[in-house]
Image (cartoon, rainbow, N blue to C red; front, top):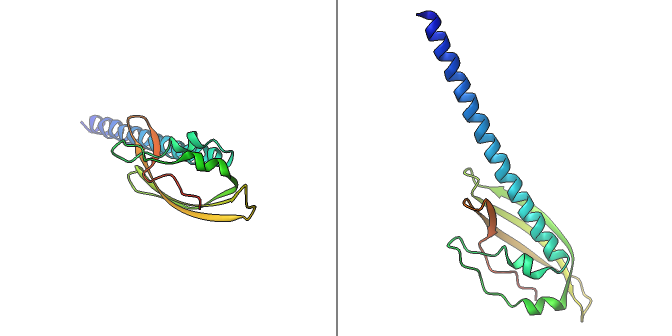
Length: 138
């Protein structure tokens, strides 16, 4: 009887550890997906791949924000710095603060824009999107 109870506790302990490890793996994969999305988005902005950067701008109801990408041909991004990143406990939303340095090719003066972006996770695609319009460079 005592032996049976010990086996039951042992099996229960293994089940708990397995579930915990599985959840940790899912969280790690979700956070890796967020890091990759932020990096790819910033690289696209930095190197003038505006359509690729624009592809991250979808509202949580699946609608893409309108943007005039032709004006972006006039700017050159010189640097991007993520200054803060906060993720909600469910790992489904992230708030990312970023500073972008840029200049208009016709002017040459370095300007900065601060972005406070709300990223959201599309669980079906395991893809992160920005629930805000494309930034306006003025």
